[in-house]
Amino acid sequence: MQNFNFYSPTYFHFGLKAEEAVSNLIHMFGGGKILIVYGGQTIINNGLLNKVKISFETNYIHFFELGGVTANPESDLVYKGINIARENKVDMILAIGGGSVIDTAKAIAIGVAYNKDFWNFFDKTEPIIKQALPIGVILTTAASGSEGSNSAVITNSITREKRGVNSDIIRPAFAIMNPNLTMTLSSYQTACGIADIMTHVLERYFSNTTGVMLTDNICTAILKTMLHYAPIVMMDPSNYEARSNIMWAGTIAHNNICGVGRLQDWASHKIEHELSSRYNVAHGAGLAVVVPRWMRYIYKKNPTKFYQFAEEIMGISGDNNEAKIIAAIDKLENFWMSLGLPFNYEQVGLKKEDIPSLVNGVDFPNGRDFLGNYVPLTREDVKNILEME
Image: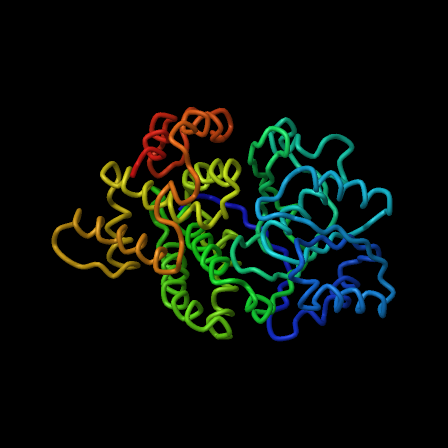
């Protein structure tokens, strides 16, 4: 196991009617003037936004609103939110929604506290985030884990670059998590969230670091939980047990408790970011296509972890190790397909003539000439993965 630092200060308030505590939590963390950030009509139609506003009015909390966050959040709305927050001297951001809304809130929180362009942190012109406004969350989608993570991903509205930042400063102060709030999601949104959660774990699981039995077992438990509850929630969207397990799995999949002390990969995420930026495909849907191809492309070069994945997670037995690996990858892909997710590049909009520009757009971190760590990939490797049937 490698040395590590782990700081996870988020206060999680989980369970039925958890959103009723929003004003108390705002006061607990020192908020007085709040910018509410949200997406579309869902929280208006289901009454959640109005419930929050009534709570704020009753408890003398001033608030301002910014709606319109899209599935792949963009920088233009971040700039708008920064202006609103600065003009009104906002002291806390409340995100009501899923990962896109939370990431937008995080970017606004960074930008308000910074006297230059917030994008400097995303394109790594500015390497260290030194301060940000506190962020609260009412989670309505189990997927990204952004409610407990130190990361945010935004697409530049002009250049179409999709880039991320990582800093413990942007971990939310609190996250309100009522599984019932996820029950109005469509089956497709639910499925995309499931693929996203599972991939967050897989990016950590596929590691060359040795002596990490504990985090291996945490990863295995999360993935097996998802394999168990995903079909249940697809058949019965109002199943509270399934929704609650999936919701909490989404948090611990990406707050890094299962990734500490181990070298992580993240190649699949970097490749998928180009698909969702270019074609506006849902992130989880893009991952459902990329991850099995990444696996098929690299497993022969480093099969050790794949044996473990096949046996302990996907339940594949037998004496032929390569056959087990192939069966495990097929089983994962078929599992995601059974949830209604896409299974080839054509279904997410990829055009073969776009592949060279997609490859060039992939963010190779810190000036490296390779992507990922389990099996380092060159740009030629990325091209080959994007060309796989």
